[in-house]
Image 1 (cartoon, one colour):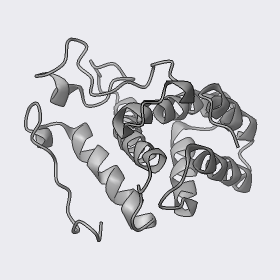
Image 2: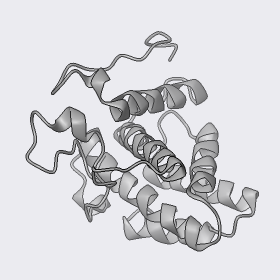
Image 3: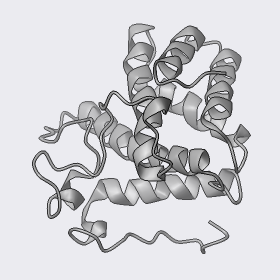
Image 4: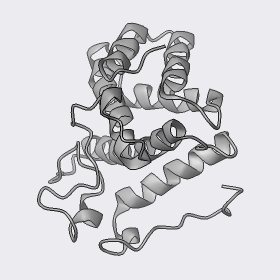
Length: 189
């Protein structure tokens, strides 16, 4: 993150944020965006996508590792950063959620809230990849690879279209799924 230094700064809210592995991976998600697209996040949509990607990436990597190694997971998958949120939210403790039925019509022009619209679409695409005979890692790779083509001020629609196009380049047969899940959130291209 050239504009903020090459290090991750976990916050101080709730418990010490560095105690929650999902917070660390979430912040690393921001570093990924800034590395791939210098100055990323200059609009509400781009900022919301950045917050959402950090949330999604934290849960996705943790869930994939848990399934791969047979680790028991007590937290809800759709509930990122539950350890950090334990001191300031009611149970279940979540900073945000992936399973809220939000669409663009619900936006509040706040990056953390609006990011839940984007993360719901990402989370809904994930099982579709498995249903198509692929893996959640295939989905994550497609989505992350598409981020190289994002603009610093990308909109929800433009970013969704980049992901859709990347799926086409990869030939994984999921473009209809991707378009449908984004459209269900009101994100069209």
